[in-house]
Image 1 (cartoon, one colour):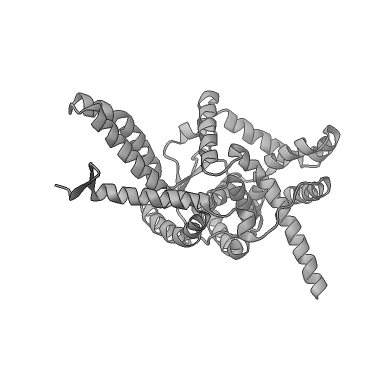
Image 2 (tube, rainbow, N blue to C red):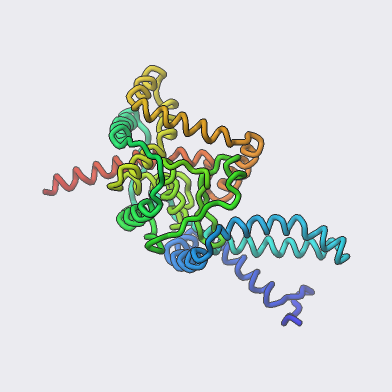
Length: 365
């Protein structure tokens, strides 16, 4: 018999009391900014370090397996309990609901409460810079110059080098750019268990929150590997915004002394830069901008797109996009999947801040 007592006609066990207490904490942390910020700054580094220390000892993506088994269990348990064990539907549904509540609590306590932390501008005290034709053109000019000069053909993946360079750069930018330092000197990245299915929805990497592990699609192209690795590592370090993860991946990769990693960083935001340019400039100006990019890079981007489109399933992809959009909006990312493209605004704001800071130092000298 489990220890229990009755309150207002409700039978309370220790397990139910613990679940209720944890649910209360999650709700408070999601709705009280200071509580969410405390979790992200002080509690998560310990939680993330502990869970990732456990998950890195397991050679496969345990988070993927957990999610698959959970979905299967929730769907199959009612039939088993009803047909084999002859249980009442009320009892069956309560069991499923209880399990889902534990999963909900586990998700937020293990990683999800990072959604309640301050955004990039508040964490770094870097002011937001609104788009103007002048600052956008200045950014694009500098970006295309660096993109073209960093170009190199990448035919293989040096995973050890990518890991080493990413850890080094995150340690370097941690204090100034509002991101935690890596929990381990050699973070273990894993391959997604269901790569063929994941490729059908166009996902190249993911953060598995239940065990604080990050995974990459097994079909990932060599040129995409460094930036995707750095992007997912940002999520492991507590970054929830996709735009911010893109920003950190860009900063990490473009600071590397390894040319292939540096090029991967610049290439990772090309589609976002072109998308913003197409919306903000006229057709002629956009055509001139596009023509300044090395033909080899345009051809590479085209081949990459064709490669992923050959694996993409429109029906499954649209369903996944819809679900993920709802998920992001439900966790305070109001722009949903459009959040990815907001990386350009972050980059412009950062460059403007860096230039002003540099001018101020020169004046003081």
